[in-house]
Length: 330
Image (tube, rainbow, N blue to C red; front, top):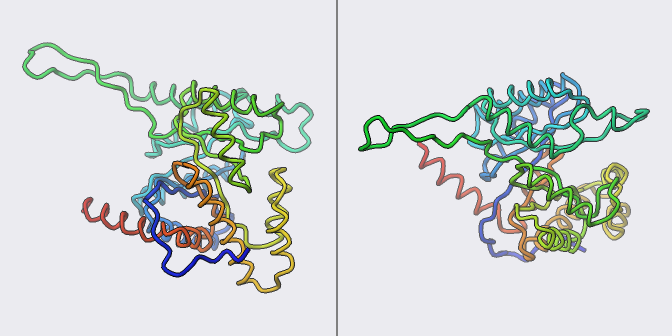
C-alpha cells in the first residue's frame, strides 16, 4: 500500500471532523500543544476533546487546555470524564467546575481501574458505569439551571416554563471490535443502548483497523435500537513502535500489512506516508459506508491528521467553512 492519492483528488462533501488531545506534561509541551490547537482550529472542527487521568494535576492541565480553546479559538471543547476513583460528590464537583468554566460538552467514560487493584469494581469509585456518569452530568446541569419562566406575549400575567439548557454534547465510547470485558457483541450493543437511554447523544468509537469492523458494528447497533450518531475514531500511526504500543494498550491486533510496511521502511518520511495513507484509506472506507463524520486521535500532533484530511479532500472544504463562519461572527 502506497497511501498516495492521485493528483487533483476531488473534495468530498463536508462532514463533521473532530479531534482528540491529551494534556501536556511539561511547559514546552504546552507551548507546542497551543500551536497544534491553532492549526487544528483552522479546519473548523465540530469539537476537540481533551483527555485526563485520575490525578488532580492532570485534571487541572486538562481544564487549562479546554480554557485555551474557549478563549483563543471558536472550537467547541469537550471534556473527558471517567468514573475511576471518583465519589458522587467529587464527580458532581468536577462536572460543575467544567460547566462553570463554560464547557458544555463531555465524553463520559467508565475508565480502567488502576493496575494491580485487588478489587477492580471497588477501585472504580461510586459510579460504576458510563451510563451513570451520563445521568450525573445531566443532573448537575439541571441543578445549576432550574426551570425558569417567561411571559407569553399578548397574555398579561401568564407565563410559560422555559426549556432548561442541556449540555451541548454528552458523548460515550463504542467498541467496534468488542470491549475487553465484554461477553460478546450483543453486550457491546446493549451497553451502548443503555448509555443512550441515560442521555448520551453521541458515540465515539475506540480504535479499529478495518472499515468492515466499524460498519458491521453500526449495523448491529441500529438493529439493537441505538439511534445516536456513531463517530469512527481513527489514528494515523506513523512508526512501528507506536503501532505495537497501541496493540498492547487496546488489545486490538494491528494490521499485519501496515506493521510489516512500517517495520521494513527505514525512512521516517516514508513511514509517515505509509501511516497517513492507511488512515486515509480507512477513513474513506467508513465515510463511503455512511459514517456521519470522523474523529481523529492526534497524539498531540497536527501534521498526520491534517495530512489525512488533505488526502480525503476534506481539509480545504473545512478551512473554507471555518473562514466563512469567522467572517459571519465578526
